[in-house]
Length: 408
Picture 1: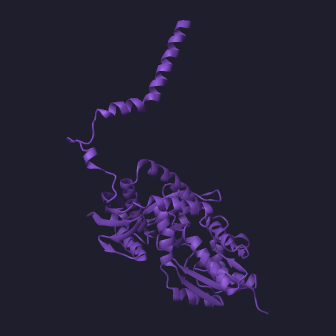
Picture 2 (picture 1 turned 180 degrees about the horizontal axis):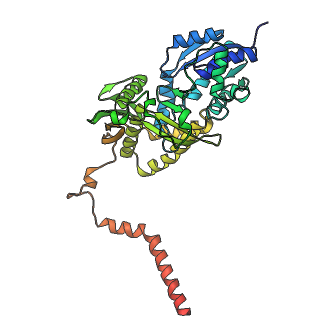
Picture 3 (picture 1 turned 90 degrees about the horizontal axis):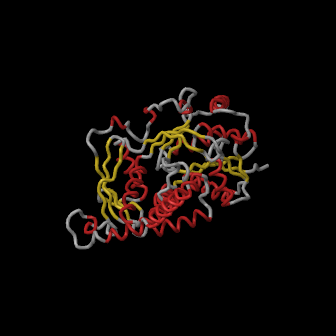
């Protein structure tokens, strides 16, 4: 008899390697492994062969880096979305794209289910499953961490040893890592105690800031309608743009954060994130928006940015609200065109020069020297009107106090 098919989000790491064998043994399913290339540094031939040797009937390796940058990274950058003031959403916006590809392959293969390796404590289970339900609610979802008897990554290692599955971690070095073109995250191990300072030997995308060059580096980013198009005057494709900025930022120790964040499921977690190129782009984009957006638009966009980040973090990518916010964001980016020069030095990244054909900065108005475009006497009337509520309030308070004294 033909077995039912399940599509597994497969990375070749500890969890998904064990899950592949577990689905075959415990659920009697034909497992189709899908490795979605979002820019993680992997030997995909090795990953593919490992999946086949572990029991997969077929393996897909899908390169989506271009789509990842243009349809997920750039929209989030244009929205200035940052979760809880720190996190640039590297894992968050990769998950809906991966889930989308899983659905496409499940439909192509006639699979009845999709399986993933996200734990029952994390955000990724929500991100995967909301996307699957939004795109094809008829597919069953199997989340082994919510149903099997294995309780820890140590248990997974024991299971792998029992079934002769090679794994890339040990019980002594057990960090959980997620990497893509945008970032690298580190969780677990000694990071689970927030009183432990993280070991800076864990960095893989960046040098230690204190070991970065002693001389500052400068780089210029050009934007067109909110999208970065060139570095130091050289045009780059979207994928090469991120890769080049990762190289520049990584060499200068840029983009390392160590944070405690609020997971969607209600608990706090601690992670160390490396986002060198992304940090440079966010700093440059922020500086350019300050130059070209008026105060009211900029202030309201901050509200939208916070909501956008929340939607992305919570896995609500394919929603009507997210689509509506994208339309607002795109309208704000029409004039976000210009060039930003940044100074990179031992982990710090600061915009130092800005220019744009749509700049709202006008030297004729703000100069401390003599000018003929601004009558400083006009400020008195403005202040009187702006202060009118304060003036009226003070007069009423004074009048009330006088009356109370007369009664006494």
